[in-house]
Length: 90
Image (cartoon, rainbow, N blue to C red; front, side):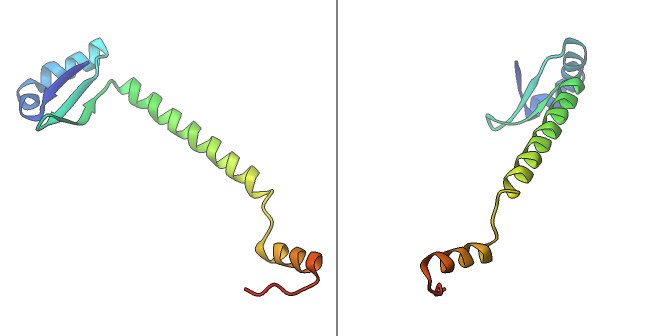
């Protein structure tokens, strides 16, 4: 994986974009020696977005499944009071 500084990026942008586009390379852009961004092939970005959508779909399905098992607080209080024969002081 190629790394380049932000200043060098300005001078090499054409070359780096060609490497990303045609060689499918990934380029890490650093600022003051720390990685801050990346140039990646468009296909990688599209894959990442599809994976994110799938992940969100899975999370929503899991949340829906677990919420169907939840009992409202009022019902829990009523169950406690029936079980113990006394009002629950909140």
